[in-house]
Image (cartoon, rainbow, N blue to C red):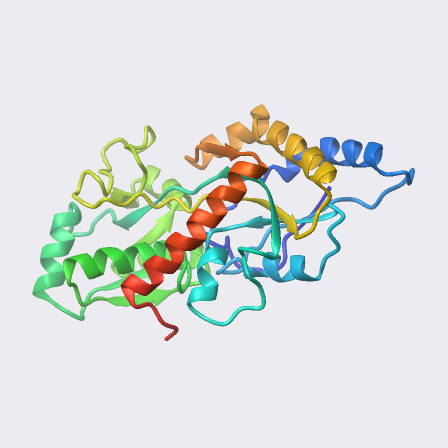
Length: 302
């Protein structure tokens, strides 16, 4: 399998890029594809990893690809959200074949270790006292961290400034330089947290992280929010069910491979595997939820 990773920017959602199942699934996908095709030398399977913020590169590529199982893409939930924010050339409810959901991200709010805000309440108190003076960064406009921050800011009726970056790395560098006061970031911030340079003031997981047990979840802070932006692997619409079955099986084995599980653990991510039928149901439900969220928050392009 070839892993196409276009663009110099960071991950579509968080700026982190845990080893996708492509690295583990390569021999399985290739060998199983060879058995299902008469050609002795079939083309390699290409997995598109959309690193640009928004994650739409893979969706656009699949719209042009043949439904033969040789071109696949990672699919972040931002693709489900984009059509309700701006005009897109794809419809996530009809234009793709959902093969397997794999995992999701660990997100949270991080500040410098020397920040006067020791916890989320300190931030809220200061932001209310100084409306319009506090700036936070995110890994991209309308990324899941940005959307979740809009939810939190709206609930708390805060006036703060949002600075979108091209991934976590740029956001965290700006935070370290004190150009923004906090970042809504993914687990790529963990290295700096572990080094004592940054500090989580909340995490958006369902339970506290074993790696950072002192960071409270949003649920503990009174918000009914879990934000982990699950993603998976999809293909073009109209794929042969037999090919779907072969790829689904290979992706499941890859997702459960010890090397992949170890990579997820290093990024503080959980395995969230769903088969094709389950992932399709999840996608349809998530599309409806994203539509309702965008409408409820009144989100429009700047």
